[in-house]
Length: 265
Ligand code: SF4
Image (cartoon, rainbow, N blue to C red):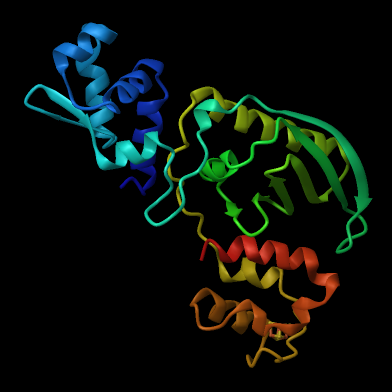
């Protein structure tokens, strides 16, 4: 199963080409001989295409016959990793438009920053879950039916219904820029028509966790300091709900950030 950056690169490279994607779809119906594949997609580059698909562990070639590997089958179907629910079919998704920023309100956590609400049309529904690997810090929440991504201080939440919220943006210009980049990223994936490859895990440091804690060292969590709490949280020796001050509404944005970060521990 691809997991390291080199393997992810091989998968991305393999599926970046339309012919190779077509070959994969062709093989989804069952194993085929090289002759049969060549007749449908041309013979001159066939060895090259099959070699790249094989290197990415999407296709297995044995004695002149090619078939999808288990990973290749799961990948094509947009299936997330073992045990997870199958997402919606990205190949049927339509390119999205991100329309008007409807509100630009001061953030509760920091009045110098803004919270914005925009809308995505058409709504992506279950496809959002499949798009999670596009974002280095992104996770899909079944509970709220939304894809939550983090970039710097800004948390963007894309709901299955099409609503998009952003917290801690500097101004309308930054919000527009981030929405444009979001639209471009999503539409590129939709144009490819296959689920993005599993992402590389983003390392989370204790200091990053600490930065979003209340930093009062009140010891309510049973630890000597907020930094000790951050280290124990990283080690899985405590849980976020032990920090009771965090439940205060003034830390709502901090909580959102911590939820995104702790998903990557
Ligand atoms: S309860 Fe929260 S604020 Fe208090 S020391 Fe622990 S981590 Fe810090």
